Image 1 (spheres, rainbow, N blue to C red):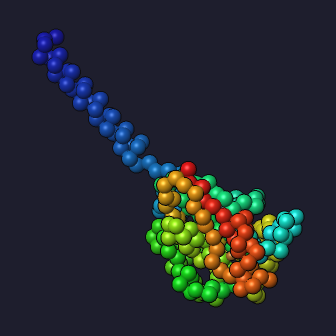
Image 2 (image 1 turned 90 degrees about the vertical axis):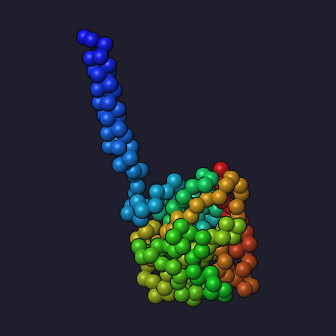
Image 3 (image 1 turned 60 degrees about the vertical axis):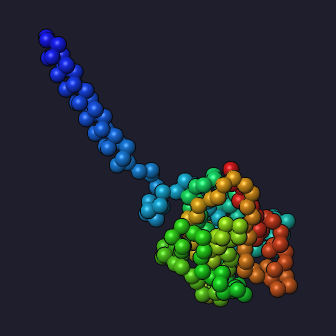
Length: 223
Ligand SMILES: [Cu+2]
């Protein structure tokens, strides 16, 4: 084979190999996307999921079994953990889903009945894109004031037939499902809290569980 023929063969092979690699790059990498659990998550690729439950009263064996509270739960509302400090990765889109089993307390400051600081500006209430709720129907708020995040959680109606009294609560009981996505800030400890005067039996509804970390208050530990 002449030098010229070898060169032509070499260039041809090089072009073929490069073409195959580009094809693989497009076929395997550019057209694939991360797996996702549901349709709403598919629209926004999220890096972490956080499932929470809110109840009218903590578990019967809790130190304060009459106190309203948040819990950490799993995606099926089956495993309940009395925790209000949540560890999340920094600079990441986090999808939060709240199974809300508590009744309606109502907001004093109706400004908080609209969502702020979420990706897209709103949230999803029982599958429906929502921007704000009637302030009188609010049960709780999930807010991280330091990063301007606040999402109102709709309370179940007084006429609910199968309400949950104490944690843990099953999805077969009356509840609303609220979900939203937010971007975590850089590493650090961020306080979150509720702003609804939901502490029944306390002056102005703001004592007890509203002032005690572990019920209506907690921390987001961003790592
Ligand atoms: Cu609350």
